[in-house]
Length: 156
Image 1 (cartoon, helix red, strand yellow):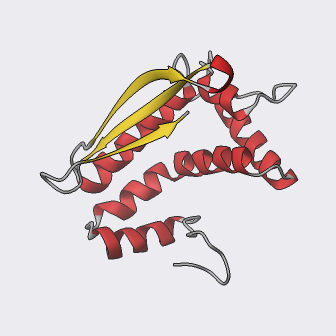
Image 2: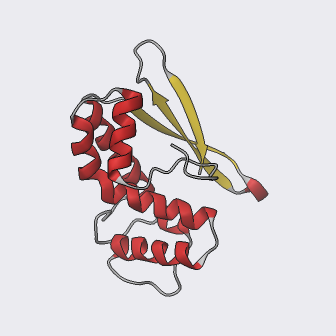
Image 3: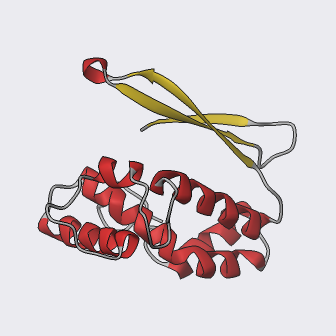
């Protein structure tokens, strides 16, 4: 699972995700189909995350490609990741809807396809952020195991 001296998991290709899902989650043959159908979105989310986490030329180049795929143009100047996630493009795959909400909807569709039933119920709650700015917290109710739900929070 870990490669060499890396301290993080490498989930960067569909076959790895599929193998690990089958090994650790015991998901049947629907997982490879779900991963294949959703891989573009999974990869876009990874590239946006990498741009946020790494200030490198490579992460910027990958992020620019995602922005072009989302907006169907190359904007100048390039929007920051937070701005693109909150954008409501007028055309393209996220036309008329917030990109972040579109990503979450695609995650939900991926999970539904992989395990065969809905299990993510997102709710957004405003909360105080740094410098008095309003941030949003996404609360996901995860219930992979019946009668044992867990709650994860991500500050956006």
